[in-house]
Amino acid sequence: MHVTDREVTVPLVWSDESDTRTLTLFVRELVAPARRHEDLPLLVFLQGGPGGKGPRPTGPDGWVGHMLATHRVVLLDQRGTGRSSAVRGDSLTALGTPAEQAEHLTHFRADSIVADAEHVRTTVYGGRRWESLGQSYGGFITLTYLSQAPQGLSACYVTGGLPGVIRPDAHEVYRRTYPRTAVKNALFRDRFPQDADRLAAVADRISAGDVRLPDGDLLTVRRLQTLGSDFGMKHGFERVHWALDEALDPGSEDLSDTFLAHVAAETSYRANPLYAVLQEAIYASGTARPGWACEEVRAEHPGFAPDARPLLLTGEMIYPWMFEEIAALRPFRAATEELHRRTEWSPLYDLDVLAANEVPVVAAVYHDDMFVPADLSLETAEHVGNTYAWVTNEHEHDGLRVGGALRHLTEHLAATGGPLRDA
Image 1 (cartoon, rainbow, N blue to C red):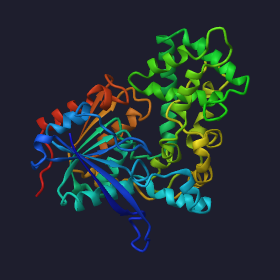
Image 2 (image 1 turned 135 degrees about the horizontal axis):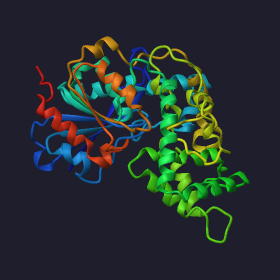
Image 3 (image 1 turned 30 degrees about the vertical axis):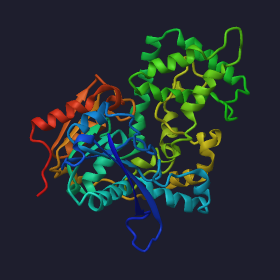
Image 4 (image 1 turned 45 degrees about the horizontal axis):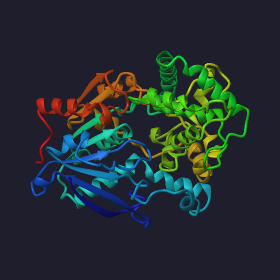
């Protein structure tokens, strides 16, 4: 791959020219070396998250290699991540009161990310249309892009990320994902029946008290349960199984250092705190219900209680207790509470514009997706013009990375007319 890195200055607040605060946006372009001087179509990648930086490819393989055969690939570190003015706990608390911190964080959602992408497209790439690839949360950004700046897009690929735009509400999402997560737990026990007792033994040891993670955090059963987020991925059952396989040292009642290191790595949020901070804020468009949706809906599912047996692991769920128990999230606690009290947000979707959409959209909808409910995705696909939804149970949420889902989408688009062309 031939790699070009750029840094671009953008406003923190796109909607207010009088606000002088700025951010640095990091842009990485990849192209096949033999084609670096050719006039190739552009593909911008909108990564999952929130709070995840752009991928750091190690070679022209996977979906990157597939697209480099025909395109220049543009990887953005979305604002607040990676090399794009990453949001850190100490820098956030230095901004002032919790309300001031929360106001700052409101400018790291999909509408601002779209404005950043449009600035890059018009200033770096001469204003030519580009194709987009939205993975997971990147699909949410795609629908905001189609709502607010469709003139910048020639085609959109979405993998596991068509959000519910008719009723953009976190409560609606969790009322679907809790039952789906319970099903995943049952499938896990069917696959590895011995792990139910092993998981219970680990939880009992944690309940007895004073189990510390390598960073000093006290491990609780509810934090242990968050390992279930991996159940939504292709090899998640296996990864959780092998972690439990060596959780207890033979002849000892203590949890192994290996297991504790694994739990710490999977649940610390040190590399992506915005994932936890903005997890529910990404759903809010216009008027929103205040409060912690995930915590409220959990009360409707007592089977997920920490003392229930068999112990159920949770999924892509963020709870208020995390900002007390997890060291990397504690600096964000006050600002996050402020965000969850908000009822008015910038609108992310324009239903009329989406209904009249002419940009080709091809989307993989994973039938058994644990994070993005398929029924809400299909409701959106029916509303958005010129949209093709491929429903499949061959892949989990990471079908882009480990399943080759993108090839199906690109082949379908090529067979049905291809991207729009610049006028």
